[in-house]
Length: 227
Image (cartoon, rainbow, N blue to C red; front, side, top):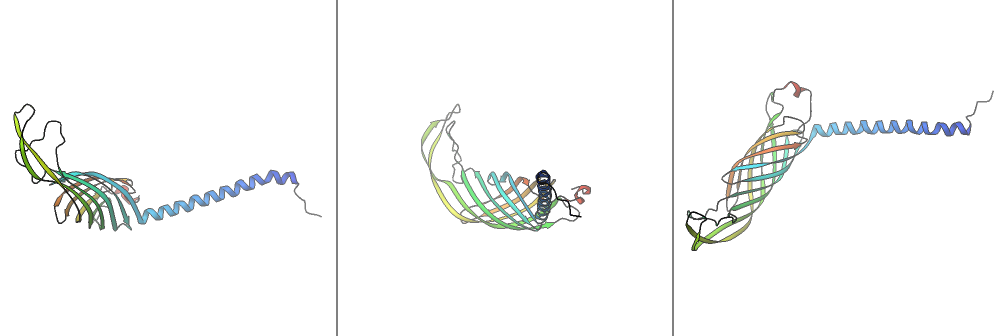
């Protein structure tokens, strides 16, 4: 007996079903492979942003991007800008009403390698020690000279001063230990005492930051951990 042959019309009807089955298998394999790769990436690589404010002898704000490798080694790249009243400002200095008050300013782009230290029984909290360098630009108000008096709003008269602006570019040393609380996989908080020092100035204080991105991996052990 000769084997039966599928007619041309039947083959044409069957072909779309075969292609669909192949495409579904391919799509399933792609999804599974991607899921495995993402899981492995999350296990060894955390990338997240940070933004917040700084308080200290200078005050201001900062933003940055953070990378953690295998839960231990870290790298921070960021920008900060902090301000305060000029060091050389006379005690009786007053700014005319509605004018912009002059400030000494420090702007820094920083590069900070670091190490995470685990805290026992606190899987969502980690301590980080980071130290590195910053490219710093400073705008300083210097050489105040009194040139007369002006009417100070409703409070009488005040001395009128002029000053020079001194612009400096230097390399700074930055030391910044941090406590990070990753209360979810994608969000957290950071408290960072910091110290920045260069040949011209020193600034220090406390940074408070919000963390957002892949802050940590998600594990079932975290569900039972209080912190």
